[in-house]
Image (cartoon, rainbow, N blue to C red; front, side, top):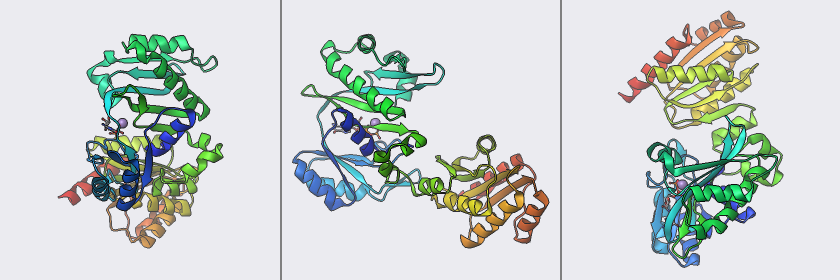
Length: 380
Ligand code: GDP
Ligand code: MN
C-alpha cells in the first residue's frame, strides 16, 4: 500500500531525516490557522495518492494565511483521476536552491535493494531516465551486509555532487535505508530532496510503498492503514479479502485470478478502452463476495461501464450469477455492464442471468470490444 505524503514524511521524521514543519488540515480555516502559526509562506498540498499534483494545480504556494485559506478552499474537494481531496498538508515553504532525487527500491532482476540518486530532482525519475539517463546513479546493496559508507561516497562522487554535501547526504541515505529495511518497504522515495538557500537538506516530498502483509505486522503503522491513505474502495476490498487496484481510465474490471484479470486489462486496452480499476475476486468467490466486488468497483466515480470476466473453476458460475443479480438490484445499476461467464455450472449461471435480463457474451475478446463500444457511446 502506498502511504500519503504526510505519512511517508512521518516515517522519515522517525528515522531522523529532516522534513519541513508541516501539519494536516481538512478545512480552509484550519489551513489558515496553521499557516498563521508558522508565520511564514506556506505550501498547500493535496493529500492524494495519484501523481501529477503540481501540474493539476493541487500544490500551491501561499504568501499569507488568507491565501493559504483560499488555496485550501480551492483544493479541498477537487478530484484527480477519481480520487477526491479530503485533506491538505500545510507545509512551511522553504527557499529551494537545488532539487535532488533519492530513492531506494528493490531491483527485481538483481534481487537486491538499490539506492538511486540524481542531481536532477523535482521531476519524475522516469522522465529523467528518458531525457538524461546519464544523470541517474545507482548502487546495489547486499541485504545481509547492509549499505557500506564507501558505497554511498562512490555514488555521490559519480553523480558529481558538491563534496561539501557528501556528509549530510550520506547520513540521509543511511537513514532512508533504515526506513526502507525496518519497514520492509517496496519503495522509499524523496523527490525532491531539497537543498535550501542556507545549505540544509530537506525531504520536501515522500513516496513510500509498504507491503500490506508487512504493515499487518506493525501495529503502530496499522492505524495508518485504516486511515486516510486508503481509498474507501481499497478499505472495503481489504475487509472482504478482495484485491482491488485503482487505474486511470473509465472501465471497471472484475475477474477471478490474477492471470485472467491481467489478460482482461490487456484486451480492453487493445480494443481502445482504458480500465478505471480492477478487482480480483480470487478463487471460489461466493455470491456475497461477487456482490461486494461490484459495489466496490462501482463506487469509483471514474467508472462509466463494467466488464465482468469470470472463468469458473473452483468458482461456480451460478454463485457468481446470483451475486451479480443481487448487486444489480441492490445498487440499481444503470451503467452499461458486460458479462462473460464460463466454466463450472455455466448453464445454471447463464440461466440465472438471462432470467434477469443479462445476456452474457461468448468470449472475452468479444466482451472487451463490447464494453469499450458501450462506454465510448456514452461519451458521445
Ligand atoms: P508532486 O508534484 O506531487 O511530486 O509534489 P512535490 O511535493 O514534489 O512538489 C512539487 C514541486 O513543488 C517541488 O519539486 C518543488 O519545486 C515545489 N515545492 C514543494 N514544496 C515547496 C516549498 O516548500 N518551497 C518551494 N520553493 N517549492 C516547493
Ligand atoms: Mn514529488
